[in-house]
Image (cartoon, rainbow, N blue to C red):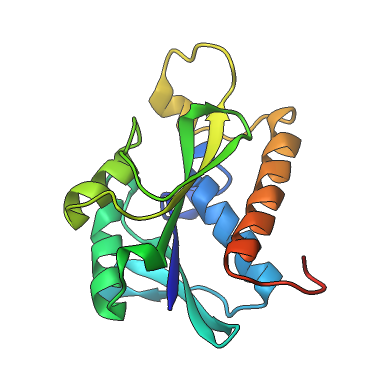
Length: 182
């Protein structure tokens, strides 16, 4: 069993924002794999889509908490599904990486990301895989909060779409999924 948790903020107000890259990635993956629509599961504090890939259960989850409380959903999901750290992949935006750069790590710190800080603090460990998608525009941003809650510009959007496509390819490879959708 595998869990892929995409970080973001719930609600249509945040759709398409830089901070919701994790949610956008899950929407792309769910669609590509033909999994069911996301359904809210209140006791898990997340919207969940489940399916079977190569005879293994795959859970895609979007926290229904705000970003800074993402760990609440991760802890609930890990406990409910009885997952090991190695069976979890967290996908999120990262201001510490250049726009559209993707970086995979088996473990690590939260860096400057409050959603990851919540996940690590509440799990009590950073020993789980993560896929970071860069959102740094390459110039100083005076108000980071407004920047991450803003939408991608017309110039940024194609770069981010390419990064999401690459992340989709990489995650499918990790899950050993091949075929016509690759």
